[in-house]
Image: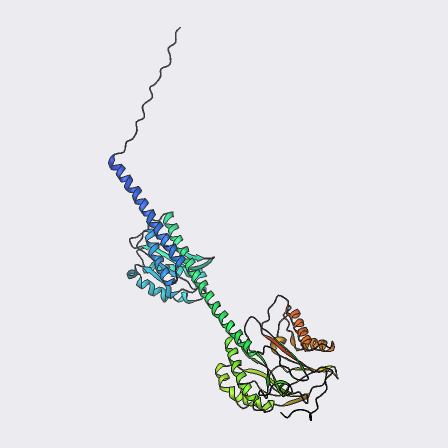
Length: 470
């Protein structure tokens, strides 16, 4: 039985589809159009990025944002509503294209009351209200809105719209709009950081000028005064204060040993306030005081006259000055003093081994025109130590939040005096105690100034008869 081979069905031939010349031309045109559109979009983004990298005027850059956004998305217009650093609507920087149909919208946005409150840009409910306002002003437009964000903080709102109605919206359009919004956020953030840096530069310049003024006020070294040892230091804080101390010869025309044996004025003061204004006021007062010292008047009269001279200038600046003025006669070791509400100096009496305050009644310099000042007087004995200081010492905060205060200063001074150190050693000890209290890595809040005057133990008074006539 023979069998027939299986019948094979012929496989149909696959015929290729040959597009027509017209279809090929249309396809090429589509590819060319997409390529041109992609290149145009790339050029727009590159131009915006270049403007961001090199811009010096935020307003000019923000003007480009709605223009580029509208062209990238291929819609009629766009509106940029930026926020200020505190979240308020930035009315001066509202941008829109085309301008004509958006003028009423910009006017409404400029007068949008909720937008003038700090933190407006962080309130989602308020942003919804603004979105509705924009939509009401462009009622027939298809619209898309996105947030302008930089470093996680809202910097504005970007709207793109087409008056023709619903937008033909794709993921590419969405990404383009968001990219433009992100670049706008970076520009706003950069500008605000630049403005902040400029403010810091101005403050730094002011502090530098103030520090220079203050450095010129303070003596670069202590003078030689017969019969006493002197040491002085000002520890500046971050901000420039109004601390001032000075040593002024009452007879500046004398030289050599005659000047050392002559009467000297020792002054410690502080202007209420900081920065350049305080430094300038203290410069003015320093000049007035040095002129008054030449009069030879006693301390209470000098403070009285200084107060009258400085009254008008201090009243206009709304500042006051504390000042302790004393004069010392090496021939008698007599110290006369008057106080205009400054921290009273502390006197270590070696014979009694105790500390007292040198104080006298008196008002702040500049508080009222006719102010009277009391006069005090004390004779310094061998071993006595006198400490002048400013409130930056006693008001210095410690690690626990407590102040260094006068009681701690008295204990530190008593300990240093009992050790028998000289004036420089006492001064170093006091600043070491202050630094330990404040903390090694912490800065003082205010300038701390101290002057130490010590009468050495082995001092004998010179014979008055043998002194040259001054």
